Length: 168
Image (cartoon, rainbow, N blue to C red; front, side, top):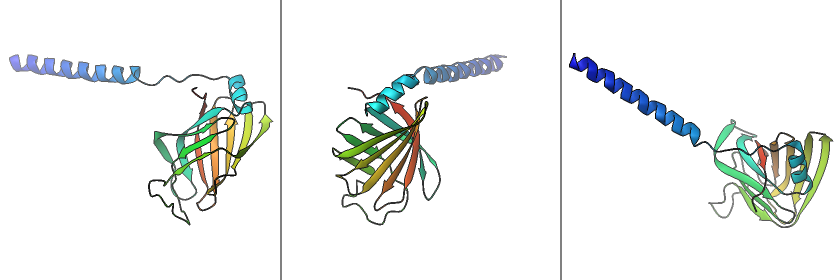
């Protein structure tokens, strides 16, 4: 009789621990700030936004979900790119720690084409970086975005993610 009561309390205790872990995990999830179409349009027009990559689609290989934070940060005068790379490269970087697409550019062209009311195509061509020829964003009014990177010495690579407001 006592062993049944002990087993019952152990089961209840384990259930309570499991429930509290689930509730803690749900309460600690990050809060996403919702942006409306006008916010996205203003960020694109002012060339001040952050692209956060959630998934990478290499030219060769499989699609991968990204678990770390990879971004392209853009202001009127600075392009800060920190993205991973998966694929074939015809020229290795001099610094082995620079295996991804990592650079800061202060000289680049920025061109916006409005496809519809809810979609913008942004083309960025850095002129002071020889490894990346072009970044092509397809940005939607709900904040989701796709990025295609055309490199000189690497396979083309695509990313999907979302747009955020730059933190000052």
